[in-house]
Image 1 (cartoon, rainbow, N blue to C red):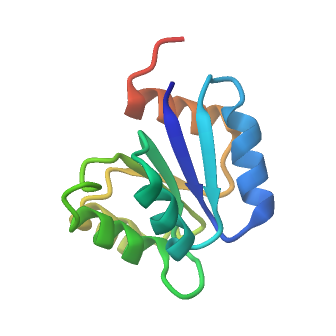
Image 2 (spheres, one colour):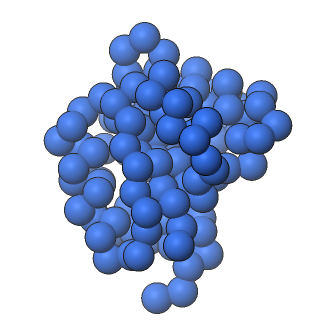
Length: 123
């Protein structure tokens, strides 16, 4: 069973994403901050992280850079979910190694298609 971590400070968005993921047989974890995401990751590996860019304290971009610098987490695929749709931000993300970027608002179908592509799932 694949394990997915949703990291977003918005409970509403976490719920929406969680509902979208119900079509898969995933074990789903949620964290409302980067610190809680790190705690969750320390309890065991996940197969995918869905990560919000804008969060208080440490944003998703900073968390991504931190994870990529840690041997045990650097290969976990990350889909950045963000309202940040400026060209500069997208280029910054790509240059940093973020390969999967989905701007809000997105549809369940867009999210599921991206997850299928990233995890190479068969449906």
